[in-house]
Length: 454
Image 1 (cartoon, rainbow, N blue to C red):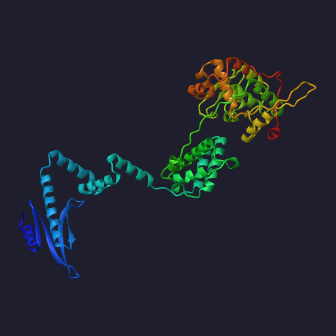
Image 2 (cartoon, rainbow, N blue to C red; image 1 turned 30 degrees about the vertical axis):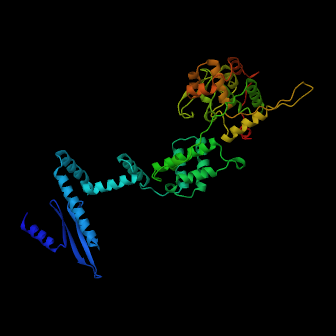
Image 3 (cartoon, rainbow, N blue to C red; image 1 turned 120 degrees about the vertical axis):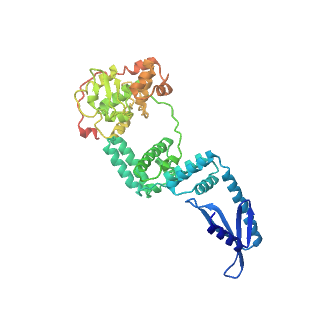
């Protein structure tokens, strides 16, 4: 040690009121008079290291001399033990310390400062490093920069994107209807919408006659809202998707409803006179099992009477995968008067008209009593939701006994066919179903647009 530090140390000891010693370590206590005239005792603490690795000196102030001396004694002992521990570091520990110092260098942090920060974080979390990593990732995701954009504007942007990417009119209409309803009530920016906001809105919605939303309708709204905020996150309009925290409702599948052979015969007969433009959709749904949305997209060029199949293109399928559905003999008879004489879509009307025709045809099956002709009153056939497709899957499975084959024709999975349609009907019923034919097929002329729109 050179003379200058030595002289400085001697001066400090001489100026000190008290010096605590432990091993090679010394801690000085200085006595000072405060501006108010009272005595104060200052303890020189050198236990901290700055971020650049230098020893930091700070003074602890006490009004009680005994407390100041006790603190100095404790501090000297701690510093001595720290020095002793440092001297006993193994080579591996020393290398670890140097490595940690180098890792922290880009962040301008000392090992001591980093250790202290991690320790405080772990005290708060009460768990190990995995929880600390998770907390940091959550903070980073939650507080990443976002652009404040009103929910209504995000909805407009999403709908434009869906249109540019070729989403179907039906899908975009459903999105617009549900999302605009939410945007009309939510005036916040997307980045400020919380899970509680979405949950409260869903809980407040009412269906017909003021009843709460059915589980299926609730699920549908939740799905489109999830799509909206997933888009918002991807575009930087929200830090996270609040719908992730919204309650999910379990939708229980009800009993599968199907039509009986006599019922579909009555429906087709009624369609021949009341809605001839809808008859092909009715027949294809019953004897080929296409979904309603697929029927609305189907074109006459997709039906091949010669090859006896219907091609459901990926762009027209709900599952976005192409499939070929066989054309049953009775279905070919129902479609023969139309195929080759019409072009464009099989259903030329609007989506709402499609569903309106279903009810009209069902009501047209009613028969009034005629005693002179011996005709008894018959109530109209009740229209059952999705029953055309359910009927096809049930009768086709009974006819073939092959769940995989029927699943391929319906565009779903064999497990679904087994779970919902196994043994609903007998093979004899299937034979009657696929034998429902027009009594006297006649040429059916294209209906004028004015008639379709009625």
